[in-house]
Length: 285
Image (cartoon, rainbow, N blue to C red; front, side):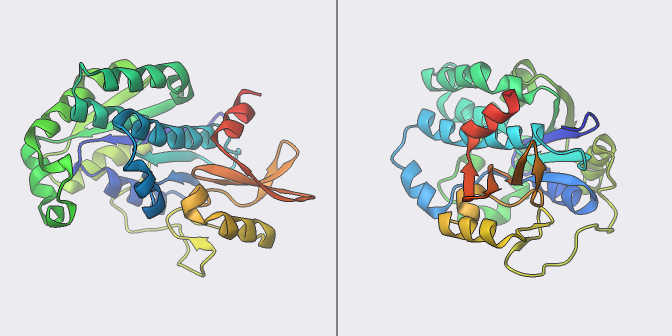
């Protein structure tokens, strides 16, 4: 990993501008590792429905670990790594859903402290807060399509604020910026951009236009190698391993293409998958 790689994760309240800032950053930064929000596919959603809150949280944390390891293993060509939400969001959700004193939250927090917090060292968590009223107002248009979600429950939102203000700084090694975003989106983007060192208000983009099915606009990378592409498609595409965050490259004697939830190695005997466990082993080697 390059000593100059700057690693950030945007966390905080729904409607606070996290995803907008993330999208602007990855479009404006010329050498950026971009890790999109972890969302389950339809297949995963069906499987997750049968799990308890602790098991569901562990599913999200496992994928967050893969992203953290990819960022730590990033080659020197990258200058910035940015994630749209990370492990703190997983902890915040179960904290607000089950209660701060619940056994479920305690179990997930222990798992985070035992195996994940150390991987967060060197990463700055930028937490964007908003009032309950602002969060509800900004998500009004999504309310109908998100019936049953807790984002519109005042008590849930108040507990999220409590977590991000008081608990998150104790859990993450570097919670350095907490911005209140009740004002304009322009002001929020200006604050976040100053921290990232990226002009989020500029319309200039370093990402090329969409070219074909192998190219991923959000991350700016393409799966060029035919064998990697065939393996990627056969195993389930982006549902399986996420989007490419690097080109195919040499990595400690391996030909590797990193994705936001793992990697694919191009070997003499074909392609193979590097999952979260393999990435952790590589990082600690």
